[in-house]
Length: 304
Image (cartoon, rainbow, N blue to C red; front, side):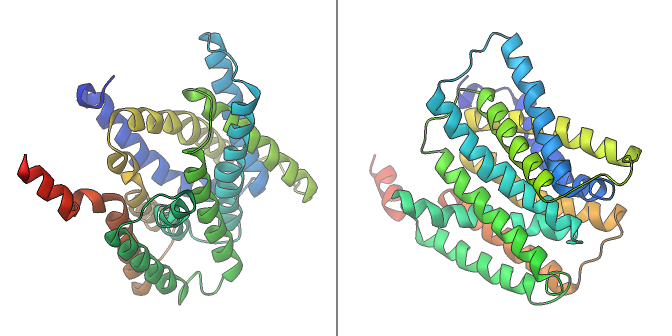
């Protein structure tokens, strides 16, 4: 299906899924770590989601990928999910508010732009401006309030954002399995690594998780992993990258609203300002080419 032929309803549903579901996963993680050890929660989430998705794809007749593509998918799974998501889960277990975790993770497009330079991808001035604005937002966010009193948690989320950004850039430059098979292998690799880390770190269940814990795990597994990942894959095949990645500046708003409305979380005026600054920076980076086209391109279009 071409981008111009994509049906409006599936596109709207896919965007809604990424905006709301991925934005709500931060709050679901916060609820989950109240009764699950953090790495165990993340490991079970991705292991179960990966197994279900792999079984479904094999039932549909999709073949297993070659060794090289599978190993590449495993590496991307470690960077994006094991480190990227695993450290966010660990940070929320260490009392980093879910909304602030989402704000920090919103910097992924900024870091991805920096890593793109390693692969020779040109960066425009408007995008560099967005990166500088985003760094200012990060410094503002960490200069007071919750993160200033929890430097370890802030570092964990920052490393998570860096790992997700690098994995995203690397994943666009290497051979990966076709379609949803890539997501299945990435989740299986991440789940195995996180469960191993959970065992080695001595995580144990002191009691059986309550209903909230099991509901959080189920929501993260089904909606946050299987459904949202496939919605994202549908978008990148049918819309421009700017639209597909627009979740990066919607998710923090959703996460903050859920955390403050239902989780008893509070943000200081400085943290609200940092949220606005970081979202503005991400808009500059993701939509800069659309909002501010290069002068040469505009001139060439007028000459036709």
